[in-house]
Image 1 (tube, rainbow, N blue to C red):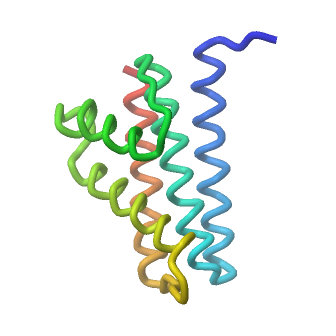
Image 2: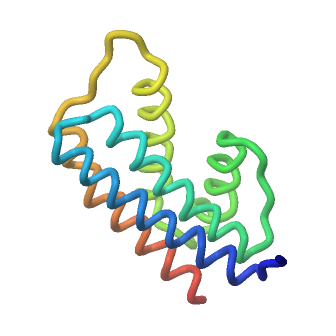
Length: 129
């Protein structure tokens, strides 16, 4: 079955929203590192939807981060705060997933949750343009 670009974009947005919901559920049970992981991936999936709309290809996580900065943050299409947020999430996910003897705290995670939700909304707004 062939999917259209619009199908792929809708799928990625839906996946971003579901993954964001998972992040909140994990925070509710105080699973901070797993919540950070899901916050990063919610943002990542939203960015992939944005890239699909603009036919931008990137094959690595670092490539997605770089392209987001170059094509959407530095051009002013997305606010600089979202570039910083995405960069922080990228670093936090690495630290949380691969760092030994490290656990994020409640304040870090609960501060990020509304910011990631705002980021997803900002990306969805860009998708409407």
